[in-house]
Length: 601
View 1 (tube, rainbow, N blue to C red):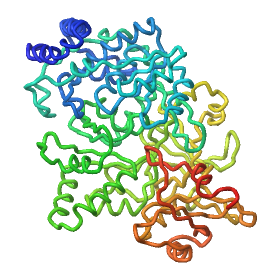
View 2 (cartoon, rainbow, N blue to C red):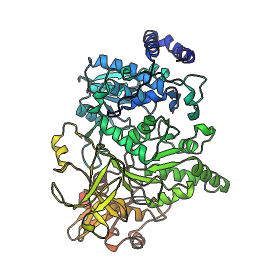
View 3 (cartoon, helix red, strand yellow):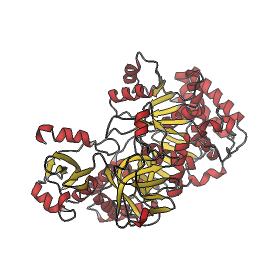
View 4 (cartoon, rainbow, N blue to C red):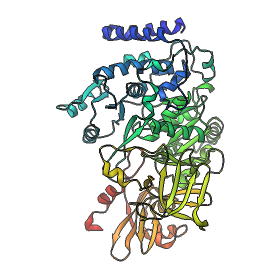
């Protein structure tokens, strides 16, 4: 360890000493003691789960993160996390596998607290500030959190929620974030990290042995609640490692990658796909506090950035791509040179753009390709399973499909309403898919998943957990899938997106995609309305382009061009906006109640 890092730490802490002298001095002493004890690097045995903070040992002073405050090294994040893990252990009296909730912004503090939870053997429960107090209160009580960590901004609200409970409120001290920052004089260059010394030490650098992580729980992530009350999905460290390994293999993550992160950090998409994957392989994450179209375009185009600092990966939900397209149309579409510049930069400097968490409408897919030259890679996953299916990194990406199974994941399509051990129609893995009995044509049925990536249980809900698994231990996703011509498609949630009308089964997602092709419609949700004659009627809720008028007869004529007549909507409702959650998903039961009151059905 060179003297430069020690001098930089002294400078960083000197400002804090004026206000928090006792605490900052204690932490500085702890940090120096830690640095002095670090002598060698040793990899954990390959048969053990390697938690992400342990993997960080390999990357030393390389830049791990950039947020609005600056750059952070793997070494800095590791040491600050370890110091905070000691505080957590003291507060929890040395107990392990307690639930530690945290409500933190999208910056280095989130990573430090997440890693600290795992270093001390706790279960991380990430929350989101956009949730109303009543929902946060539900999460805290349901998880039986013993500690809630937040910033001074949210402390008053959370103090009211934990009052009278045994949950302790902690306000995160910014000193640890400052200590994790990149020392002065070392540029944030992926190619330069090899010259720095790595002397993190072995597995004894944190209190728990590697074996602890082989079978312990790591995190609760609550389901989106679009089809029912949110449930705490219990993920183990092995689950998380399996999910990361699948994506690292399929999308060829490397230490040279720099990804732009603008997603919420209380969903698998933002936590695993866009944050943990890069930090697991020694890549870099550029984290924005929230999604803003102008800020994202600035980073995608590398404005005022050196080549070594440009992002080469981006992952988002369809709603984000739609908003980026709208911004592009307003700012760039009438300037030929700017259009050429955007296309050139995106097509040559960015290697991968991914869409997920909600179905990707074909009009967005097509327009994004025109603008950037990228055919978005659409994939499919769930909170309970991590990512399951993915279009290829190299190969044909077909709009409206989600590719094939990821490494380590097994899927099958079964006959719908087939009981606890249903009839299997097709079964697939990374190696390929086998259609049972050589059935011809598209295979449609319930999608089920198996593998180390699949969650353990719903927290404190054994009956709900049991209902979601078959007797032969396959997880029932609740989605209807189709396998045809070598690729899978998701037709929608079996409970809300499969509309049974006049003896036909209609995919609401396919109808939505067709309707979004209409030039005067900018958003759409399709639902089934109860009907005495047909069972259900196909109803479209749409948002019209400003100044446009949409009438049912015209919409039906347009729909018949690409849909069978039984799938064309017979009910139309035009609204100002369609409510969606932070991941771009529509809660269709709530939408039905709001837009179609019972007396109007």
